[in-house]
Length: 140
Image (cartoon, rainbow, N blue to C red; front, side):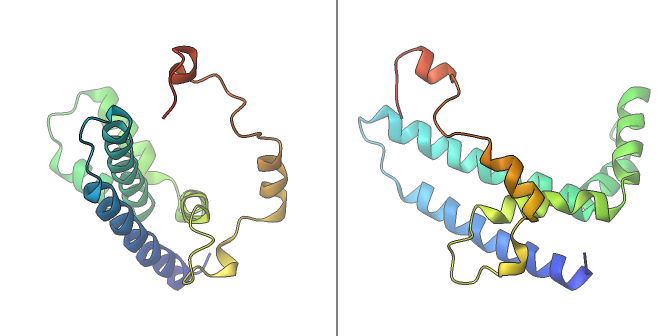
């Protein structure tokens, strides 16, 4: 993947995450517990996606590695392995994250997953997994 394409995807994704966070913070849960859980989940989702983006960019892990942060030998080994993964192996993560926003007007068609990856995703059927929420008879 070309570096400028990666940077454009990062800029796009950061803007969409800001949009999601703004929308989540604008929710007024009141007495509705489901809204509060949804708000918390959207904010946590955005934070997790940012961590994945940092991993792709490799900045956060390199900073963590440089500072040491009192890691034990196994934690240091994991950081060393994670920082050694080349960009071309990390960048597909961005394609997956960005694909959720394919209906956005600023989305670039070249950011869509490869056809063979789409075939794998077609095997997934929404709402067929047994989540802990469904097992407890709740819906969100």
